[in-house]
Image (cartoon, rainbow, N blue to C red; front, side):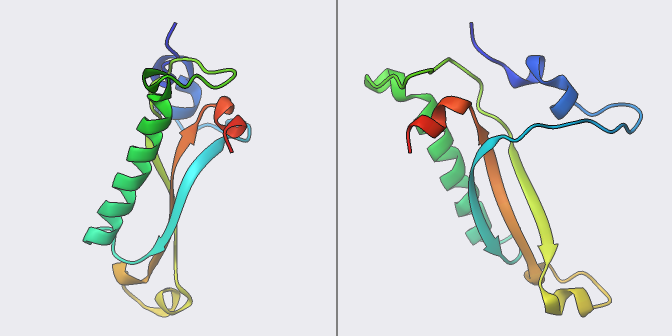
Length: 115
C-alpha cells in the first residue's frame, strides 16, 4: 500500500481552521542552501535539482534497486526555512536579494540507509 502523506500525515501538512501547537518528530530531508531572490533562475534550478533527486530515490525499484525497508510513497512537498542576511535585516524594506534559505524535501526513513 502506497504511503500518501496527504492522507496519513494531515496533522503536519494540512492547515487547520484554528492555529494549534503540534509536536513534530525529527525527519530526514534532502536540502540545498542558498542566498538571493527566489524569483531568479538560480532558485528554480535548485528546486529542480531537489525534485529530480527526490523522484530518482522514489523510482529506484523501477531501475532494479530496492533498498532495505523501501515502501512505495508519494514524494513530499517542497519546504523551506527563510531568513535575511545581516545587511538585509538592517533595511526598512524587504530586499529579496538579501534572502537566505534552506529548501528541502522530506525523505522516508529508508533513505538514511542509502548514504
